[in-house]
Image (cartoon, rainbow, N blue to C red; front, side, top):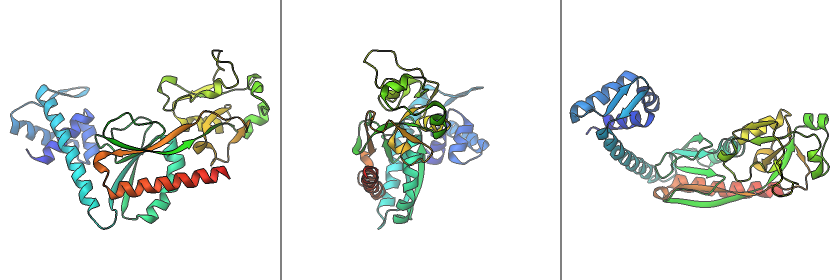
Length: 302
């Protein structure tokens, strides 16, 4: 089978539509349709049920999709090994991280990495859900949670502390709490919601700190489904929020509330597929992250 046609079929099956496949591959929708029709003609098999809501795989199509996925993974690994056979790390490096960790902590540090490795093209895939590293949806991940997949290499990068923060505007209007008991005296709070989707355990600790276990948590004035959105709501003066220090300490628009009060800590990991263990690009970025995390922790301790 022609790999170009097979790759187009796999993209269409993965996206569930011709439009999605066209966007992924950088082709026109008509070109995608022609290649899939040509593949079906060569195989004398119908691969999709076409309907108004998109594409549904037939049973033969499902079998071919699974096989094409395995081939795509092998091709990606082969491309990575070819790129890493050169003297200096070069080629594309796909990095995935949660939105807040990636946009606030990681991006400002990438300029230094680019200066060290100018031939590596960085591709950021920021998402608050877990991409499939074993399926090579990305080359390396930074995650504030341990990996749930097999066949991955994982290393603890740093421990992150959390503290209470608010905007100067909010504190000027509602007053600055001096004790934990003051938090229950008319203050407003920002929380993560829905709680069951929180990427970090105890992310809503600001609603219960200072309370006896089992007592009613404080009500949230506003909920947001990303940590970055929680930070923005804090900046806007909606209330007090518990935030990871990598979100807040570099943000001059936030004031630390009850400085001696610590929230729960959590670990951040760097994770990559076992197949890329020998990749120079991955190794270079992993080592850079380790050094960057050490430097950040040292600066935060000063």
